[in-house]
Length: 235
Image (cartoon, rainbow, N blue to C red):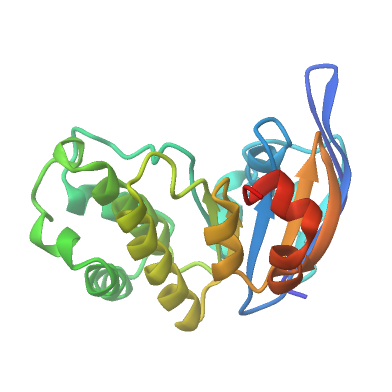
């Protein structure tokens, strides 16, 4: 098992927001986490990447306990996160943003190769490499945020609401690229409110409600589940 989350509890102050969740991600998978606002999806990703610390339980990458490590060490081990809202550096160029994603790497040749890989995945970024990131469209900024995370050559890419605020045609394009990234060897853990798009992309999924995982199944079974259809698929 590449990633294991075991009985994970997280608090904001005295308020517990994750109540002992368990999830697994196998190497090569795309796994989706679905749920309404406030379900705990983003908190789960932020805790896996070391930005939040658990009050109980553990997170393991190839059996290495991530919950004992600072965030920058977790990146070095192979986990990179694309945050909700993109969080690019608007006053830096596209290329400068990408180079920041490679801050844990010490191999200039490897960094250059990663940059070329990003440009192959997102050709528009190659055209805009000297452009200030703040002047990009929303879709281009999302591509840049994904590209920046890929610069560390992660084993697992964590994505938090990549479709947020984007037109449907852009969502389709970005999700097609995510499939390509996965086929090139990157495992993906995806938090996404667009449940239909997420489940069409994913191999498996988890459904969260108020800090608990209430359902886990293959993406195909979740798409066919009447409760999931009513709650998240509009019918």
